[in-house]
Every structure is written in structure tokens, then in C-alpha cells.
Length: 305
Image 1 (cartoon, one colour):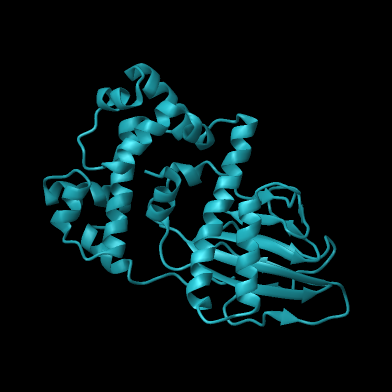
Image 2 (tube, rainbow, N blue to C red):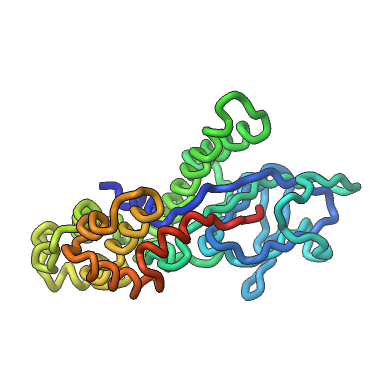
């Protein structure tokens, strides 16, 4: 059981979007909050990220900027440039001008809006992955392939681009967690590298319907109950059984969004023998009854990039 892949699959909704964005200095563009995660990759030139509660971030060629909760921000070629545009559907992708050219690949991922996951909750609002020689070669390769498909569409591009966007999301998160693991900063980076916690997570993800207890999970993990509870809570951000409930609800939401599985069968797949008990627990987490959630999931969000 691949914990990272399963987690992303559970919280991802809708289809990812992306597009090229080309401007000539001077330029400034506003990005409102989006209901998901966003990213920018600088392909040519440079720019600045301006955010309300932090220092400006300089971006150069090859840099990746990821906003896991779709935070609002500004992009500009210079700290002195006026903000004259707002990201919106249907706007021109390229505007010519007298100054240096900046080309960016911009995109967004729609994520489940009612219930989050601690893996994303612990991430900072802005993740900057500078282009450094030899670092994160898989991410660089995914970016290169994606840009090639967007700049020179060929038969199959419509299938290739969404798949590459999904792959890039995983590589962005992998790069971030690899860096955190090297810095020994704990959190989910520690959860992936702690054998006991990782074993407990794999058990929960692999069999969410199983009547897990802390003693059962500690047996799988090969440590005492107290040790597992302490290490799990420190890295994951909540106790094992709290996370079990969260994962069951995320799994149920995914089944409701992506399948026509009857509600009684969904309930059984996530550990509830009673459809009524499942519906009550689901509504407590999502604010909607399972049937209402399924109907609402048919109306995807529109995200401008």
C-alpha cells in the first residue's frame, strides 16, 4: 500500500487544469484563492511572488512554486510593477510588450473542500522548490514532458497532459517530504520514514473496514501501544484511531464521488455494518448526508489558471 499515492487519490477531485502564461515586462497579475492547490513553474525569465503575510519570493528558470491550499498571491516581473490583471477563465495566454519575456506553466488541482487531510494541513501556504542541479530529477523530467505536450500538441496529448499533471503533483510532494526528511523536521516526512508508523498507516489504508484497535495496530507495527500512540500522534498529527475515522470518511467520500456503489456497500467498505450509523458519521464530518454529497460532487469547481 503506497500511502502517499492513496492519500492524494482520496483527496483529489475533478480534473487538473494547466496552461502557459506569457507576458513581457512590465506586468503584474493577481491570483485569487482557488478551491484546491495551485502551482507555477518558471520556463523562461523570472518574476516575484508577492504574498500578504510574508517576504517576496524570487522565482527563476526551473523553479516550482506550489500552493497546497490555493492561497491568494500576486506575480509580477518586478517589485515595482503595477498589478493590472486578475487570473480568470478565457483571458489571453500571451500579451506582447517592450520588456523581457517571462513564460510560466500555471495549473491547479481541485481537492476535496469539506474534509482535508493532515498531510496537506501541515504544509506551508507556499512551497518553493528552486531549480538546483541534481535535485529532484523526477520532478524536472515531469515538468519537461508536460511543457513539451502543451507547447507541441500531438495525438494523445489530451490524455497525456492530465496524467502528467497528476504525476507532477506527486513529485512535488515527494520532493518536499524528501527535503523535510533530510532536515529531520518530523511531521509526515517522519511518518513515511518511521517503520512503525508507516506500517500502521499501511494497515489502515489497506483495510479501512477492519475493526482496528491500538493493540492490533501496535502488533502490526511491532512496537508497544504507548510507543505507537506517541510516535503516530507526533508525526501524523492525531492519534491512530482518530486517523482511522478520518481515513474511513475520506475513502467513503471518494467512493461516493467516483463510483455508483450503493450506500449500504460504501458503509461496509469503510467499517460500518449499519447504513444509518455510516450516514450519521459521514454527515458529522462533511455536513451533508452521503446521498447529498454524491449529488453535489457532480458539480465540479471552475478554477482559473
